[in-house]
Length: 447
Image (cartoon, rainbow, N blue to C red; front, side, top):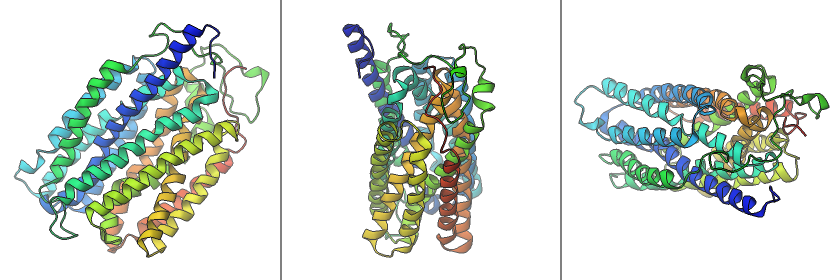
């Protein structure tokens, strides 16, 4: 798609756009690896340090809430500061915290006190993790035209699944090296889940410093055509009265919008579903499906890679077949995700249950990527970080609740059946909320 008549400017803009996409994918993949490695270390933390599932669930709950708040606050800040600076500071801080995680085993204290230290480090890590997405959301809103945003932001969102797949395979292999039987894996090895990801993060930090661009204006290029600012009225059809000046307040554009609040609720349901697999998947697959830690890592890698295809397909279908209307695609994906989760739990065979889990990932990650697209296009590029940060606050309330109570219910009932049933119902509710947004238009930019 040609954006500028001047061929030199158009080529320079395209190069900057692709460089931005590549480096934010690399950078956010590393953020994700240094967030989700905790889940793979948990079986080793249980066996090595004596912490319980309930203790670990409390850590996940506190960390998830802090992450959601941090993502929201940093979204607001990110709209006002240089994206590259925020991105690099946050990545460097996460590297430092992950190094510190590996030394927790040296503490001579009770399991409860060790859990407190783990929780404090997880909270600190999540605080800085919240600086990762807002700069990416801002850069994409400034570099990518609205009519291409669903496709290209969904492509960017594959960083979640690339990171999840890499951390699953690498950390699964690391934990397997301490194996003494299927239920005694990761003894003495969990610390390397943190140190290996910190080393990868350090290499990525250098690449970000060298190659990540700022906004087009910061790079001496003109803004994307067709991104004039208008008031987000969120009605179901374009109206000539929607065009206004860029002085629209963040309160009106984001916080007073019923559509943004409903997108937040859908994000809560999507991320509750993700948390069951991303946070408790390594433990659940070993206990309920009797897989080794290496086999669980491979299964979760397949789940994440299925999510990559789900995001890309969801974005393509939204732009090319649904006219940019995110909710119309997400209704169907969430409904199929509900059925797939039920199949994963009910089918006893390894092949059938893995196929259902991959289908669940494919269908769930599409909506996970597309809610941010909808928020960005409806609120405008000047509020990209704030709007996505706001709906992300809901998402990590959902992830935190799932992280806390899935483990607690599994421990109290001695089974993973109740957590799976609760999450399945939550995902089904998300499909209904998306259905309520069926008539919302694609964007609110001036025409």
